Image 1: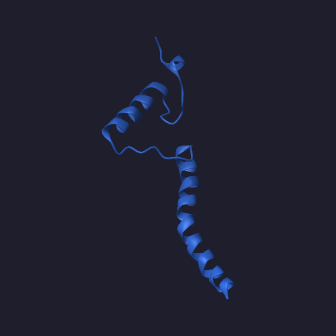
Image 2: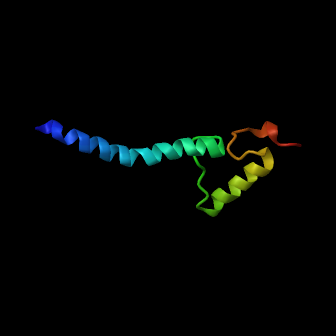
Image 3: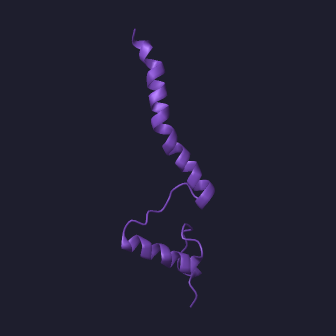
Length: 69
């Protein structure tokens, strides 16, 4: 019957989905947010370092009011 496929489908979908969901929480515990910031390109690394220098936290979104005159 068609319901014989359900245990295998549940096991496979759990094995595929669990690592992604686990990384979502791991990034929250380590970085303080659920999404990691990619530093693949030179521009992304530059912006990351700029935000770290200006705000002290590259993941916190702030505006111009945090930059000293």
